[in-house]
Structures are given as C-alpha cells and as structure tokens.
Image: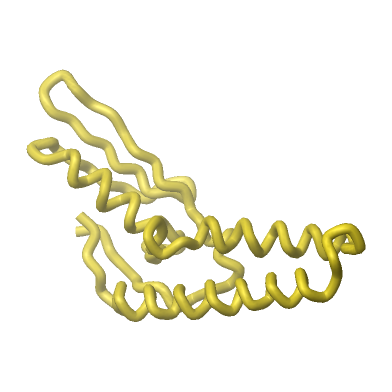
Length: 132
C-alpha cells in the first residue's frame, strides 16, 4: 500500500483547480485574440496543447503523487485497489513506473502505472508517498 508522507491531497486538489483556471484563462485569451479562421498555426497548436492539458488534468480523474522519482495518478491507483480485496498484492517501482502485481488462487495479473511527470509541465505541489 502507498502511504502519504509529505503534503496533502486536499491542498494539491485546490492547487490543481487554480492551475486549471489559469490555463483556461490563457486559452480564452488566445481564442479572443483572433477569430478561428484568422488564427495562426502556432496559436492553434497552443490552444490544442492547453486544452489537452486541461482535459488530462481533470480533478475528478487525476491526483498526481510522487513516489521515489516518478509521479503516478493516485485516483487510478485507489480505484484499482478497491477491486482487489482478498488478493495478494506486491507493489514495486521499476523502469519509471509503479507495478502492482496481484494474485488470488489461479488468477493473477499486474497494473503498470507509468510516470506522468513529463505531462505536468513542471508542477511540483503534489504529495509525496512511500511504499509500505
């Protein structure tokens, strides 16, 4: 299991909301600067990048946490673990990902949560966790 050792999920959630609000404001400014037919390719690319970030960074679907030197989606992790009651679970950090291996009788599998640090654009206010 993962244990939070530094920071707070609630504080991070509030920071995420502020960040999303700022990014949406930037998108709005770019969109207002030129009509859709008059926008340059760089403006369209900026709009698409920022809107993709807002979609990826939705507070209801995303809660980044740092474990060792990687960042994973804690919401996805907790939702998956709820389904693994009565399973034997082994968690390891390897190859820039968190690997959750599970087994119950003849049923087994693994979940690989990839490092999402490169998608966070340098945001560092997320909680730190450790494996227990």
